[in-house]
Image (cartoon, rainbow, N blue to C red; front, side, top):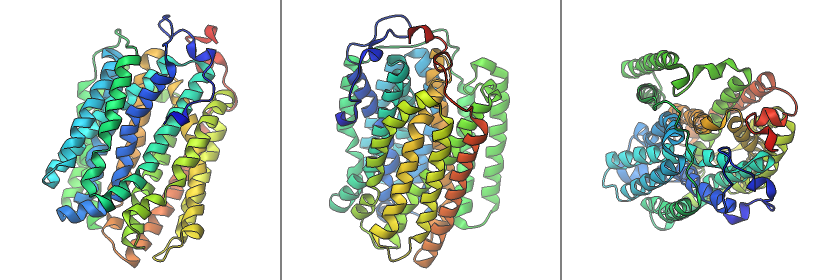
Length: 486
């Protein structure tokens, strides 16, 4: 992954840190540690996509059970990222990063040798918990380490490497599923985790904000219960293609827990896991909507496209993973440049254009049928999707990270990541009817899902155009607590 580093990490990287102390002696190795750590989450979030048919067959799983192989991971990741970010701010981001990596590695072993589906789902849930600890801390460490345009380059590199790992994982996963078996896909996490722990232990300095209030345990519990009930209800509804009593009760319960969550957050005020005052900003609302819609649509695609190619078009797991190979290449090439450009121009233009390109990619996916020619039907769609995500990923991440003061970077990155994962969680819960189909019905369901994805991506573009501020941000606007250092 060293090839993704910026070509020049010059003086701006070695500027003093927010706490006034000197910068890290090895900023590139700090960046490498955060990339390796976050790659665990990105890899595991996508590598299962090409293994779902094999796992379903191995455990003779029903459609809802197959969906929960993904959702058991996404649920704690979505609900507890906010808590993980706040705990990193309070107790130490380095400590949370290393602890999350260790938990992720241990639960990967549990998944690899799971004797039954319930054990596999338990391991997946523990992986989600580990990811919720490490992911916001890795991004917050970048915010504490880099400054100005160097931060934009670092975040762009981080985003590009994560996208490359997440989108390239299906290729490796497909090869492992075909040649070794589905359980081997969890073992690839172990060397990555070891490298991340060694680099973080040696080169990442501890950073925290001891003035922060205690973590919002009540909010975390209510968020987990609310998302869990909603996800279960939507999963059963979509798989059975009708709203039964159980699914409606679960959805109603999830809505009730979600309302109670808002009440609790309002009472906690600034100490809340999700400070509601943030939503008084039109730009923050725009970023949140864009994240949910764009990543929800994209997450649904990354599940459905390999599944459809395997089940309807007769692709092997390796071929289905290879079909997505242009994604990491184009995103890796484009994200660092867009991260730097967004620091100069502001986020509105790239965050309007990027989702529009993604919309076009979804519409091109309507040409995919039971008999697929890769170069005329799949490749154009993948290229357009890649370009759109390359334009949007780094500006979105940078815009969120620089929208808060230094003491809340973990919370801000946790919130943005939680919203992105929640979008994928909801999308996965709603595609049960497609996963349960076969043959022509699967292709028809895939086309309906692609139309829905196009609508979501277009709505994401519209939210950026209407709600984000226009034009270049000043240094004081980007970093109000450190503008004198730029």
